[in-house]
Image (tube, rainbow, N blue to C red; front, side, top):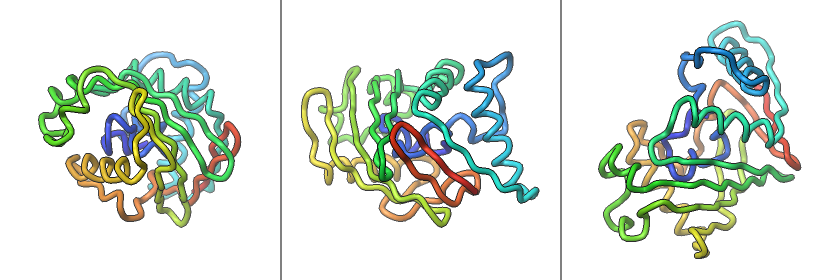
Length: 201
């Protein structure tokens, strides 16, 4: 969602990463696959509801639909340093992200994105896998990192949480991921089930 910039290599705390390219009012031109059209139409309805028509909007999207949208989004609007993203949804608001990152490209695009102390570790093209538990209700979202791996190395969840906070704070929006964050598009609730993400405004 709107949070692609929170941490490019973590895909915006992941919970709503699929919304990223819809953060602006610019819709990609040309024909789209059916799933992409479905999700873009959903964004349009949520945006219209947020801007004044007060229509109740709810959705249910499969992880297959989300991943197809992410592939299309990264192809049509490349994100510096982010080569691919795959998400999996589980019951009880648990989700998993697998991201391929080119850290050199990320640092060249915006010098200073990667904290100096982490540059010896975050370099080259690497895979990052992070599992989250989210709580997204009353228009705000919080998350906890359950487990994470960087290539073949397990990372302590507390370290990953701090890393997300550091990178998020360096973005133009100055996200503070230690506090509840507003859910985009006026959504009041988002939850996950097996292979599905649901929400409503």
